[in-house]
Image (cartoon, rainbow, N blue to C red; front, side, top):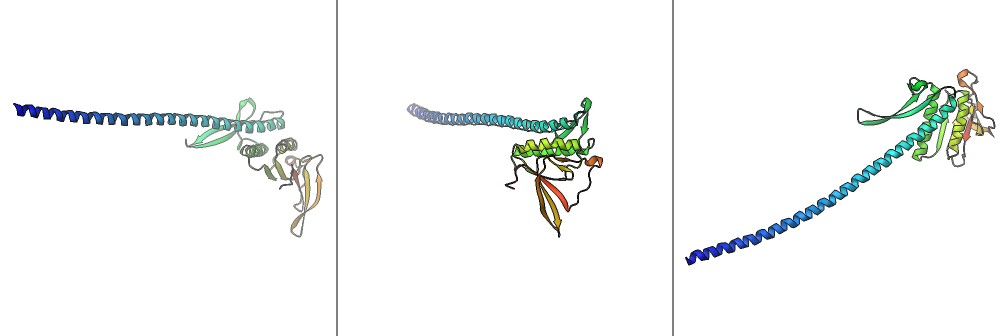
Length: 244
C-alpha cells in the first residue's frame, strides 16, 4: 500500500512538473503570438500608408497629365480658331491602349457638326504642320527642356493668313522664354532679326543683318512665291539669341 501511495505521489509530482512546463510553453507561445500580432498590425498600418500614398500619387499624376492635355489642346485650338474663323477646326486628345498593354495618345480633329476626322488622312497638310508645331512647343514647355526650336522649311503647307497668325503664336511663346531659328521661303515673322546669307566659294556667310518691321507672308499654296536661291537665302531669328 505504501509503495502504491509513493508511486502515486511520484506520478502527481511528474504531472505537476509537466503542467508547469506546459504553462511556461503556453506563456512563451502567447508571447510569440503577441509579437507576431504586433508585427502584423505594424505591417498592416505600413501597407495602408503605402496604399494611401500610391493613391495620392496616382491622383496627383492623373491631375498633372490632365493639366498637360488641357495646356496642349488650349494652345492648339486657340490658334486653329483664329486661322479657321469661318469654319470649325478643333482637336482633342484621346487616350487608348494598343493590345491592351501599351498606352498611346491619339489626336482627333473635330469639324462641323461634331464630325471626327483623321488628322493624318482627312486633313490638310497645313493643319498637320500647325498641330505638330504647337504640340512640340507645348511639350517643351511642360517638360522643362531648353526652349529653343529650329524651323527649317517645315511650314510649307501654311497659307499667308496662317503664317500671320503663326507670328502671334511664336511671339507668345517667345514671351515665356522660347527662342526660334527660322529658315523658310516666303516667311519672315514681323519684328524678327534677319540674317541674309550668301554662299561664296562653297562657304555661307552673313552679308546683311536687319529687323523685319512688317513681316513677309508669301503664300506658297497659291504660287505667289518666287523661288529663293540657296546662295541668297534669309534666316530669321525670334527672341534673344545672345546665349546660342
